[in-house]
Image 1 (cartoon, rainbow, N blue to C red):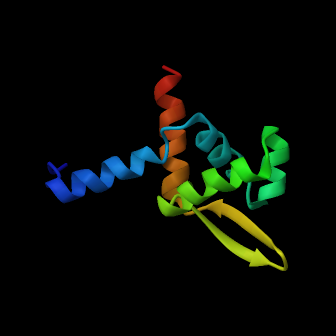
Image 2: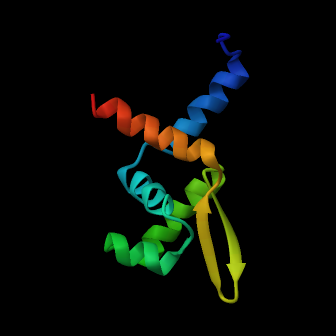
Length: 96
């Protein structure tokens, strides 16, 4: 593996900031099972929809989740398999 240049190191650090909050980890973990709307996530976590929406905005900005509109609802999912891999790697690492 190459040593990243400054710009790449900053991008990697920014990526991991998306994982630096337990609420965001919980949301990402819920999305492993597939798409969910804000209300479903809020109910599963016993949080307000406003709090969940705030965290989802951060996750979208970090490109860790994506969404699609279905009628009035926005359905969120993991951005891609890389996010799943990072979550699984983190779980494996702390389970040692």
